[in-house]
Length: 637
Image 1 (cartoon, rainbow, N blue to C red):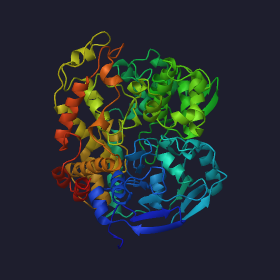
Image 2: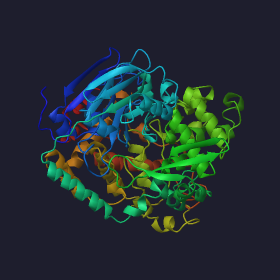
Image 3: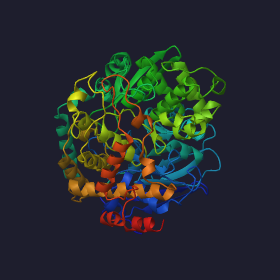
Image 4: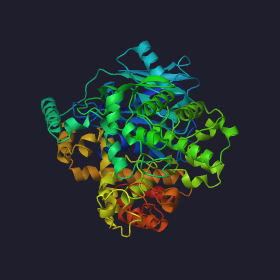
């Protein structure tokens, strides 16, 4: 395979590292791969489908970890610092990916690599150093056991501040199924257990420095297009309003409309939200804004927290962490939420899954399902000491931490006694920060997200609450005390809207840019058509890009079908709490979606996607999406 020197926008190379044999080799980026899958998430999905040995354990040396950039990554465009990670998930057993901002992806491209593929397992704790065209595996025994933040600081001291560094914490080393990969002292590839796979390969860190350039058809035109894009973004309504509080700024709205997860998703309204909201971050924590590569609207908030358990500097908390620790675990102040955030960052644990697992454990303890003797001490909601105690034990799989490190699905399966009903996950991935018993489309989005319960695939909550496809708009919007019954009518167009969102939001993960400017500020799609053309020389309409995104979506479904025995409709249901327990209080009191309505939603969704009644893509659909290899794989199962 020869490198195509006219593959504009890309560096043009894949770096493969065989950790078992200590071998590093480069190969040209295939032009067909770039054209049919764009980059980022598309590269991850295609490489995993083609190269992952079917049926392997996620922690086996045979598993792959793919790190991929997009065609727009590293160029002088708004928020072009995204990097995508993919593997077989330790959390779900199926397809997994996770996305990270920061500066690592651009540095990887400047070092000459669009994609990094890790295979095998190093014989001892190691780290990978990439310095322009040179790549080598180095010993990391001296870093093993350190926190993710501490290890990043030490490694930068050793190799140079200008290296961009990924690290794992003790949780990744001990294969906690929701361990994350950390970068830039506060950016994480947080979901699906990516960090645990890196730890299983005995890799503590990856450091990269690059000084190369990226080819574009016309430098002056590419620069002018990027400059114009920055100007257009800065003119958008909300541009100045977005930055001060970042994602924490939506806390009040979520609470007021009754979608804020509280007490292990038992309810959807927290009375103390004013003490944990965006204003609290701004007034009591924040030191400065912190942005990713080329970001005009930095959502990161770097600050300082001080609690009775100690103090720390931390990036965050952002909304999801506030929801899962401040709401779900009921931590009463923003300082305590930020301290839990810091512990997760240092230990290398996803804050979303950690908050869901800990709140489940506390409810189990309250119900007498897990004894104090097994835990080692009493645990309670609204108690930072309980949260910190459990986090530290989870990270090293000590005592009760060994059970909780397995994730809420596996832990509930062991505990039993009805605990499965309030183990909040889909496919084994813990639910993120939105209660959806009053929001059928958002519920469907969680149910059908390819990696498990994750809002990043489709965020349609606003349309739900506006009554776009239900008969309950007046009840939902009237505030507390209004709705006492689940929605009487749900129209099928909600499924089509979810699908459209599932093609749109992940498209940015393939392009290698942050979706914030599009989703939150309304930066129009025609700008991305222009930027893609100026950077790659290829003319693709927005609809053509969405067609590629649909191809990727179907391929990731096929990967999970291949990897998980019996995968299908049964894996798309939420826990029983969501279809059998009405929300007890707050603005959404009385709401739930019955199992019958969930089945109706899935029927509409599968039909609109061209999947069968069990959620399996049909041969006709796979061929229409340009996936003959996936159609062949499905036919052989």
